[in-house]
Length: 365
Image (cartoon, rainbow, N blue to C red):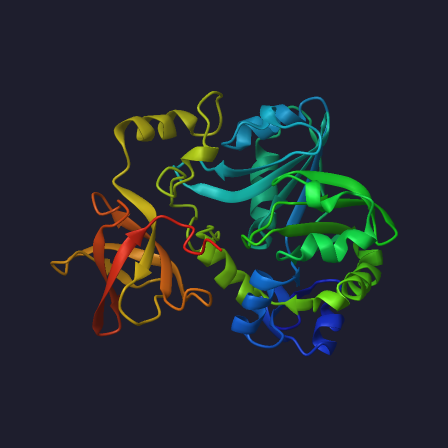
């Protein structure tokens, strides 16, 4: 993709002025780091940092059949949602894999917002549209909104002066529509992807720069810092959160990926019969967490071996954990070595490093 065809988020120039290293990511020019990944990672774990993740996609679904469409295309049970509640889910395809993972927000009866991965905006839109047989009003507002994730243990304290919404009392996977930094009807959400608490703010592009500046003014005494996608990846990996395209994709079953908890067979959805059969028969491989016992950095694509040296799986994501000081990874492993405590080897170049299957989160701070 040439620089000319890369899409730019609303605050592209702001990030460049801050000295961010910009890289192509999911078709967008995105800030990957401002200082160092480790420094930014620790800022979020110990204080407060801000990610600009405005590349994410947002679809509005409205009308009396909106819930029916969501129930058909998503694996979780969206009928359990109430106003101000969000839900993690996935879009199963008809071949046993996953079109995308997403978050479903219930704004009010007959109005929902779906938040999808940037790399899948067009794919997801086409997929959901192809199943919209009941005339649900669909609007792709991805290019109209900026999304800021203010993350870390000091996030609520640092941001409270900007809103009357009680940030401290917001439950995980809830949201409020309220005034934030002087802007009305901001979606203030608590669905974090870092494991250190915090909020996501959906704001119109027209006021994005104003809100960004006010966030940093309010957080100045808390040493708030901008954070790039590099630290976002290491933060989510320490928690064992999946990243679409790495750990889940069109070929991975939600049951293999450990997403049985968002795959509800109390309703019918796309490919539910086949997935139900798979659940009853049991999967032959599973996505597991792996901690290195030997020194080394695990990466996606590295082979997982049993102690006899036979290939039994492959890593999908891996990093050196900044908080734990050891290598952690996610990967698909064949049964029976999917149980926590199972000893395995990771093939790193010409070495076979000792490792153990571990149940995420790796970081429990």
